[in-house]
Length: 186
Image (cartoon, rainbow, N blue to C red):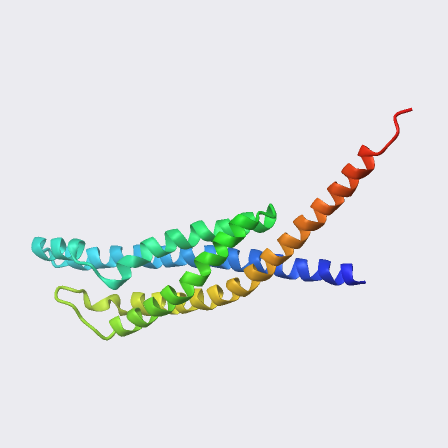
């Protein structure tokens, strides 16, 4: 009976990590799409005014949303770690997924607050119609923060279950080894 409850619990945390890593991967792709839309819109607005100096300033100025490209890339890399770690029962990959999400809880929340604040600030030469991109980015950053909290909980459970499974496999192999070692050759 206890083995069945452990097996059920293993499916739950492993399934949770799979679900969270898939959602984080999709969120990373959406954040990448928001970033690319933001950049395309900013360039299109500056080209419409046909001002070469304004276009150069739009392409070179740094904005809070520029960090989205790197965040989405790292987010997708570590979500694949979580996915592969559970499928292959690799404790190291799940540990990497856990460590990333522990850091991302802090980074995503701080970045969310920064983007929300940035929606009220207008920089020199900034197109006026970028607020919708900032609001979309803020919404998905908050969703990513929530996913990171859930991923941390599920990853900790999955690591414990992988350790238990590896320990059981080792015990089973050691018993098999002892059995084979003491057999009489007739």
